[in-house]
Image (tube, rainbow, N blue to C red; front, side):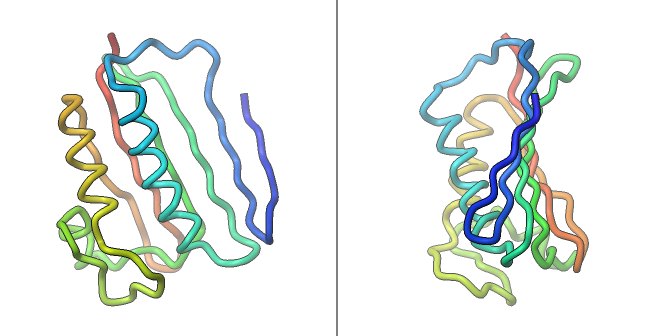
Length: 133
C-alpha cells in the first residue's frame, strides 16, 4: 500500500505491504529508529523535496528504508555517519550527532544491520533490516 502526504513544501510517502512477516523487536525502539531516520531526512530535504518510508520482506528479515531527495552524502563521509557526535562537514541543521549512532545501536541490539546508500546531488537512503520472527 502506497500513500503520500504533502506538507509545507515537502512530500512524505510510505509504502508498506499488508502482509509483512512479524519481527522480533521492541516496538518502541523500532519506532525510535524510524523516527530518528525520518527526522534526519525531513531536516535535510529542501522545499519541494520528497521523503519516502518503505518496508519489504526479505528472505529472513524485514528491510526498512527511509529515502530523501536531499543533497546526498560525500563518499568519504559515509564511514563516519554512525559515529557518536559526528555531524559531517556540510551539516547545516542543528543536532547533537547522536541520532544515527543511537539508531545503529538499537538496530544491532535487535540482531539487525543498518547502512546508507547515497550519491551527492541525488539524496540518500538509510536502510536497516530486522530478522523475521
